[in-house]
Amino acid sequence: MKAMVITKFGGPEVFSEVEMPDPHPGPGQVSINVTHSSVGLVDAFFRRGMIPMLQPPFVTGLEVAGTVRELGEGVTDFRIGESVVTLSLMSLGGYATVTIADALLTISLDGVIVDPAQAVAALPNAVTAYLALTQIAHLQKGESVLIHGAIGGLASMFPVVARSLGASRVVGTVRTAAKLDAARELAYDDVFVADDFPAVVGDERFNVVIDPVGGDILTASFGVMAPLGRALLVGNASEKEASIGSNMLWGKSIAVLGFSVGPYLQANPSAGRPAAKAVLKILAEGKLELPVTTLPLADVAEAHRRMDAKEVTGRIVLKS
Ligand SMILES: NC(=O)c1ccc[n+]([C@@H]2O[C@H](COP(=O)([O-])OP(=O)(O)OC[C@H]3O[C@@H](n4cnc5c(N)ncnc54)[C@H](OP(=O)(O)O)[C@@H]3O)[C@@H](O)[C@H]2O)c1
Image (spheres, rainbow, N blue to C red):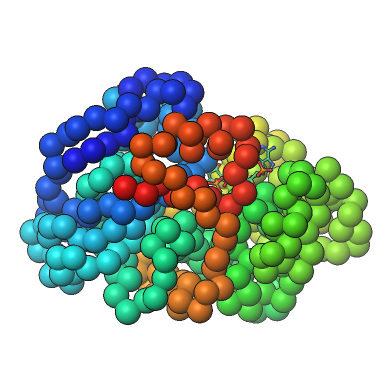
């Protein structure tokens, strides 16, 4: 197989195309002929050595679409050639022409008419949004939701999923005015530029805040949360730590929570399929579309250059 290997920590130039032996699935796993691999900010964090999980050389990429190639011992619920997409995989290895996935975290696209590039761009992050809103934020019907970094790959899945769960109002913030138009194409009631936040929301108070950005915008959000509101930290696109005052939490009767789908699904693999079932229904209705740019797998360095330069609106998907 062909893999785009991170040879050392650093910039987009550290990728190297390498021929490697085809991997074979272990018990409970499948191997997948990869057609599409999604590119996320977390891949840039791995590439730069910000997440000390792996030492180079390694292959990043947490989510792929493709067809089942081989079944590991005990896997009976897939057939060879079946069209699938994976949820977020802690084992990485997605920037390759063959990868390995846990069968429980592999979702069949049988009978679902969907472009695989859109499926891999949307489904794993939409499942993350579904799990975050149902299992951690416990979103209730009629509640309002504020989402930062509104056009990001992960954030852009939250509005439709939140509405499917009964959210009454969904508001987003974007880092720059250049992203306003793209964000307004998504299912937000209002979108604001982060520089104008929190003043721009006036007296409005939110039940749930979703924050993949971190830093100052999380801290500023505490002031616009309703009593018993939940702020859910799901990322750190700003690469900044937020300061969370413990007295403020009880004083305002609010909670700050965190959620990371990879470790959660590793610990609770059976939670993936019910969430994916709910999300596939929305995906098949065409409601989870986001802007997707497709590049050849060999152009992974260019994909990462665009991500580092903050030139991406929506998501980049690599095609094998
Ligand atoms: N919790 C989980 O399970 C989970 C799952 C997936 C991803 N994540 C995390 O979520 C975060 C976003 O990932 P992603 O793949 O969605 O990334 P992404 O597509 O690059 O989106 C990041 C978004 O944040 C915006 N942003 C706002 N303020 C920013 C600032 N100060 N600095 C940088 N960006 C800022 C970006 O705006 P511009 O477009 O204007 O730059 C962009 O829209 C990452 O930290 C990632 O590790 C977590």
